[in-house]
Amino acid sequence: MSEKTRSSPMPLVKPPPGKHMMPTREQPASALEQSLLGDLDPEKLSDLAEVLFALNNHQHGPIPGFYVVVCTKSDREWCVGQLCADREKPLLLFEDKLYDSPETAQAAAERLKAAQSA
Image (cartoon, rainbow, N blue to C red; front, top):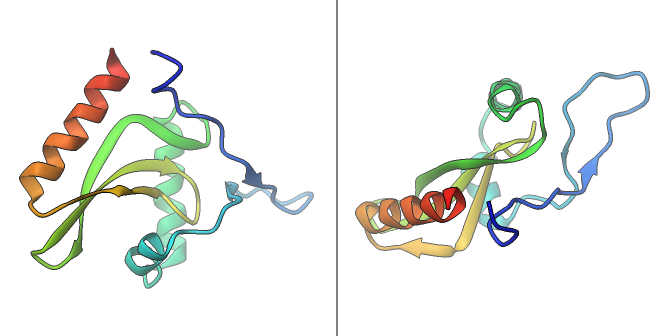
């Protein structure tokens, strides 16, 4: 994997001493991430993060090759994102990758995965 495509480590918020808790990204969720994830059950997001943590070889942060397409505006806009082992924000959206069809967004996600595999 080239240096360009490798996910860089993200600064994490440390849990309180003595408390076992999966950390989360230091940077706040973007407005788009907040609008999509803000109303979801935090406990279920944390459960999802635990599964993603296991899939990510017990490491925090973006999961290489796990790209998804998310509808951001009903039947009008789709965004490419990456699953992330993060208890509060298990989805990292690439807001510069917005598309007007799910097929175009899917093709972009597949290109990202292919570039990361090369």
